[in-house]
Image 1 (cartoon, rainbow, N blue to C red):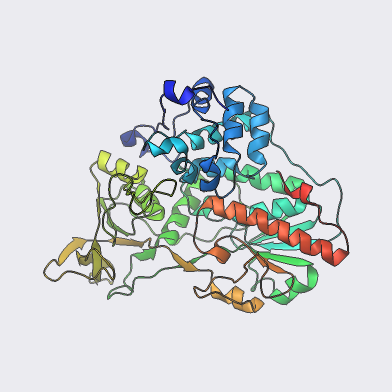
Image 2: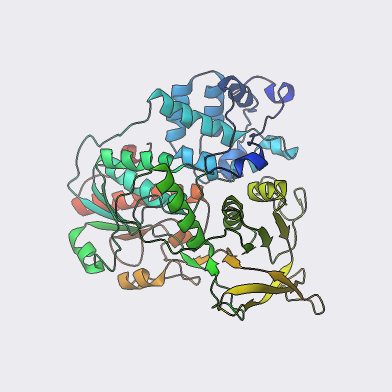
Length: 494
């Protein structure tokens, strides 16, 4: 695999981003494209490890050394076949996945020296689309059985595609006006442009998946109707109940969950770019950061996206606060040794932008005490204190401070799927409120679950993997119901 000794002769060339002060003025992707010859050199660094730990780091089980070698040798068509063998939507993961595969790369034992796997993956799929190698793959034969997939995020799209390619008649239900879930509405356009998502949606349609957007199961279509009309149901509804902030002043105007704000901004950007949607779009709620002092509570990726959107709206200032202490600057071997994902500090793309234009700061160990409003009932001030460095991260007496806050965005993660639909199906739940489905089959016969609604809030690679694996289990169930053999070959690739 790769060039013999290539990792000793060729230096890692990481992903390059456009200048942060320049990119804050636009909503297009900001990763700089690299010449394919440079990507081939990076593929040459792959070591052909006896045990490729990158496989273990990737939830999809991507065949990483295989396509690294194929790229190095210029065999791009073979590389996309290997990439599609495990991943339905590599342009999604190549843009927004944090790349646990790179953290598990053997070269990462020397921290910061991993093969640029994510960059290579992204180049493979972009090259494949440019060459016209990606197209619909309708099934060779029909099974005569029907499946309803509820929730059109990456897990639902992957499950629908796999089941359709196995020959089933698949209907994909989505309550939003277009398919894609959080990758479409929760992730900003400058991280992944939405025409990339839409072309995958159209691939599903061309393969024969019926897409029903603007339809909420349990409201517009009852659970009983679904059970009666379909031979199997797959739930991929995500983990959409956000963690709230139970402090005084939470009810004030201008305090919103992060997704309320991000959905508003991504819908605006899609309208500006003319990206189509399949059902009527809800009216804007008027959430805006323009000219305001913004506080983002939560230090993860969602919080970073709120920061980036706010500065693009020309907020007066943005402060991102996190309850936990600041992580160390390098991998803490006593806590997360290689090949585990390292719990270390990473300056987000958003905070890099905010610092570049002098509009943002990021603070750790901050306990929110309360919110105060103005005469109109809108939030005006955040009261906070320094938090203790260990659970329960209680505020330290005597460290109380105040911060101007005219828009407060709560980006503290998600708890579990919305319970109404889960309860309507009568499904058993685990201790966290997720759907209990150990091997994707729920407590109700013929009903399956995958993605965040089953495992809890997680990465997009887990969502796609769960959708694929759930489709395999559902196909096996349908085969048993029909008295035929399941067809694993139809579910093994994309």
